[in-house]
Amino acid sequence: MAELFLHKRKVTSVFHLLGEHENDITYSVAWALAKSKTFLNTFLRETIGQIADPDSVTIRLQHHEKEAGITDIEIESPGRFFLVVEAKRGWSLPSLKQLATYACRRSFTTSDGAVKRILPLSECSREYAVHNLGCEKIAGIDLQPVSWKEMAVLAGRAQKSASHAEKHLLQELLTYLRGLMSMQDTDSNWVFVVSLGPGTPKGWTISWIDIVKKKRSYFHQVGGRWPKEPPNYIGFRYKGKLQSIHHVEETEVFKDPHDKFPEIPSVNWPPHFLYKLGPNFAPSKEVKTGNIYPSGHAWCMLDTLFTSHTISQARDISNKRATG
Image (cartoon, rainbow, N blue to C red; front, side, top):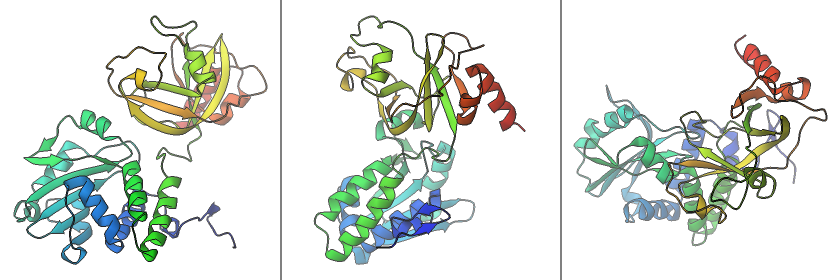
């Protein structure tokens, strides 16, 4: 079979022809929901515990209402349910102000649907989304976060009992979503360089260095002085120099490190990102730390780490380049 490329990117699913922007992904999922009754009912069963005759369901994209914004997806069955899906690419979430606007839309408030919900759809896990939204209702309407990963799981589940035509459609969607499953900016060449402390933290039976080298993993708190969205690349420094750089292959969120690493005691932390790391690589020459305080982080463009003598020099060159 001939290979197809669009702007130098290989096309492996018909949905790739739309693109990989936020609206493109949203349109793809909505199309699959509209064209596969099995996927639609799998989604409805998971989110509201119901199924519906597809002929009674209307799905609207980019529906505008004066002074009430534009919704991404509306799924309505008169008298039964009215769902508003607000989709975001990556780990960003809609603002509470935006969600409140949707909750107060006239079409939404006057609907006779017995179930009304707003579903923020993003890369965020449900636990992370609930924590960061800070509430489970807005203007009296239930918020029910859904992740893109969950959508892929539901599509896969639906595929097992779908018709032949539906199976083909859902396979196209799964290929598309799995290619985007880590929604970080895959074109970014910025590296988040962190410091790994020596020794083993108190109460642990594994060191930070072994978590990276043996488990090929790393984790940190979400937000604060740490990134709110996963980086594309992460670098590690210790013993006074850059030791390795890795592509972030997968990201998930957790609260109890013991669930992921039995060598760490159980504790209830705020949400943390857990990264699955790709193979390590590094410049052939030594790149010392330079002017960075011991536990400090640095953002560097990938190429600067291969041409600079120190990480701090790479950081400064990158910042100067980024600001013009």
